[in-house]
Length: 507
Image 1 (cartoon, rainbow, N blue to C red):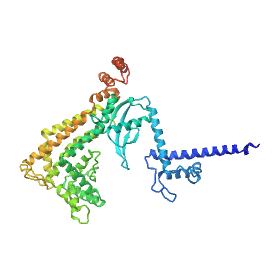
Image 2: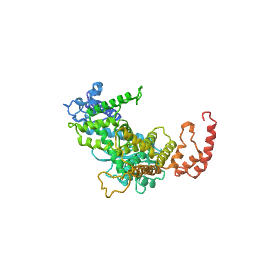
Image 3: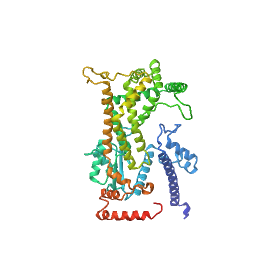
């Protein structure tokens, strides 16, 4: 008879309260998850027990939120139901997966009906599982063959609303399973979707060309091993770095006293040897330049390490001290400075965000022409620089008319060539030829016509690159998107567009 005391009213009231508490707990958990994901921070802690002083980012952030929000404090940790705390590792992973699904769905919804390009790369995670990174997420693959990658991509797209028929571009790395002409992922997709043209990143193609040159020539490969070992030896310990700075300051002061350096703001700043990065091969250029500039200080530190029996790496220091005081090392030093110096300008230009396509392609051609010109008349200049460097640092210069012998190899079976022939033909010309060949091979695969036609759509300088004929040709390349009637009408529409734009004062 008393409705307020009825069991049904009591249950409904309790259910509403539980629902509100649950929503508060869920919202707090999601806020912590979103914040950690936004900052790319790990969730788990090494020890997440109640006795731990640091339970991991997720739990610590939840604790912080509860201290500053009374509503959250009432529903988390000890105040939450024993079976609904939202703190276990499985729950943390579920929240992250839920955010990933929602994010991908939002992206796919925005892209619904639009054209898109496919970007794929591969990597191994910390558990040594092979992962395929697509622009929509990360997909585990048991094999990295082109067929396996193709199946994985199809499975990934099956979970979204995106249609592969809208695929208009492909971008992969230079691996054969990606860009192979016969069975690569690029070819398989092109066979299914002819409009999905393949364009390889210019900067990455340059990287591959430089890596091949460094690995193809045995002498060049050994040089880079010595250069990398030298940087690691000098900069591996704080004690050695301090010694290197001290030697460097002494050399600078000595040069100032002799009048070889000028005083001034910003001049003669303290610097260290630059550690090269194998994924950015042009970073080796900075390493080589600093070795040349600070060679005397480097030598003194290596000699100090070699003579001090309390130092580690004595064997490495002894070997390097002997190897880097040779004409051969000096020649490689200046040869690779020359080649990497030319490609360094190209690499920096290709990585600019505002670089236009036509200028990038022109820069590639300029780089090829400069390398080609080096074969004609610049060996004498290089050889003169090497001789001057050797004289300054008391490095023995071999007689160029003597026969050249490789240390550690049989002299009886060695070809009868002079030192001059070896350094000029077998090294200088060969390295330049390989570099030019690689640049031609890598940059030839770019669809030049497609890129030049696309450049006409650039809005830079009030569409100064606009070209009617190239835009018509661009439409012809995408035959599935433009029927015969469209192609017939397009030239007239473009003429009308040009006349309309000329009527505007801005153009």
